[in-house]
Image (cartoon, rainbow, N blue to C red):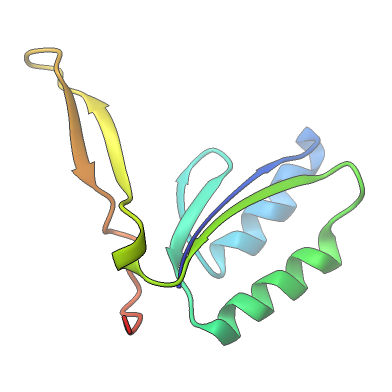
Amino acid sequence: MFIVITYDVRAHRTEIYKRLLLKFLTHEQNSVFAGDLTEAQYRKLRASISRIAIPDDRVLQFRAMNRHNIQASILEKNSGNGALTERSLLHHEMNALIL
């Protein structure tokens, strides 16, 4: 499955989430992580988040069963002509099987 997770937590807790999510996903920007996970990896990730989460933490996830159900891309401003360009977000792919 393809997953994107972002978090909004108190500053002193950001490193806790970052260390955890880096074990499973690719760090895209600040508190945003994305990648392909198997069902077993996803269950481990959820259990790990459950262990570190406290009531004030906000964790947002987007999940698709495979890459055919979602298009992930990066929007960037072209430094040459100033146009907004779209680049496919594929560097986080982890050889997951697409069914």
